[in-house]
Length: 358
Length: 259
Image (tube, chains in turn yellow, purple):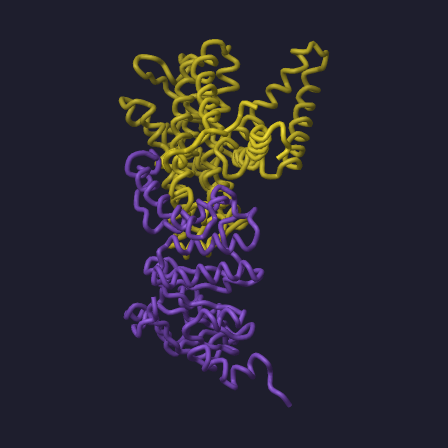
């Protein structure tokens, strides 16, 4: 009833080409941002901020990165965790070599290292597609993880083989290391994720995004439109890996605090791929939905019995969580194979014509 | 625009084979600036292969192709596109997940130059460029009368409209040479008439040179200035529709020969 675009006439092409052409969408977005920036930090407890929101945002950023590659350009990749690792190790090396420079600069710069490595492993994509490309990117996953274990220079010869985050500040406020409060870490992550999401959304709505989608949908026709496949695919790999890299750096510096090479193993790659597929291929909001389903839902289910006062043993709860989350994933994929983002769109479409069926 | 005597594209002695299979054998013909040139022939005659050669998808083993006075070496499809050759496909090759508007906007890719930085901001020069090209695309949408489906994903459109969107996407490139591979296949009489009208309008008002593959002989004979006939990869006739229609070899190829 309230979600109607009736009467919102576009007077210019600029208004019609906007990313959010409908007023209610803009208001909804503003409300979400208000909650995220004001309500959550004010009223959220430490658990909500540090264990729910920060990981959720960081995983969402990684999912956006992977979605650019898989969802928008149609290149299946299983190397996203390795590219996250490249970002994390690059940020770690840079911040220990140049401790004077602000850590945020290095976190963002680490994306460029990941982008470079991503382009390198994206080169085979001109010749191979689909599952075969996934196997080729698997090479990146195993090779890079091997590097993280074997090249001790990467973790400064630390005997534990892990990278430990040094304490760094921004405007005198600790943002990394043990003394950083969850609120500060949350806000830093939130700002980075919001800005990068906005930029990604702009890219996919413009010429470059259309180029990627053209390559995804029909590469032969795309070539005829004057699109050169290799540069288009490599750009997708670069941007995607940049996002994964920053997400990896954030993961170590603002979420985990320390990381071993096994943090970037193939499980994380699969997890990101699941988020993208369940959330919705080729959808920004789908990346957030996917991350929420994979990360937040289990936490909620785990907390439910206690909240409801049900006497269930902790181990049973753990098993039940796996069962329920698995069943829900299958349920959502059967209801809508195009992901949660498509469900969201259908819901909006229904609201638009309510109370009529179409 | 009536056909001039200036040659836009000349195909000279082109042969193309895939392993032992000869798709095209020593075919030569030319396309004059401003004309509608039909390529006809029975199934498997090598018509689509010929277009693919002109496009740069296939590289012929023998022969030369001269476009706008320049004989070209091996060429890639995107180079053909940047030289002003656009194309539609026999089995619609639209970008299924994108809207009509976005599909046609992709046709403008070569004319848009703002890089990643401005695209990221979607502000200033990038946005101005976007609007400028949106305006051109809207003209094409008006021309093809597909205003009502601009925001519809093309995968959901009926076949006839998809063909029309595909034509629109090719037009967005402002081509000098437009290759149409069976633009009227599977259409009903009304849709065919519409499509014929668009093709004639394009040719008359914008002076676009058109090469067209079509099986509907009525359409071919009415639309085209000259017709080239292929059979089993060989050229068997070339000339005005009247000449081709009367050619015994063409009649034999299409109707078979009495025994």
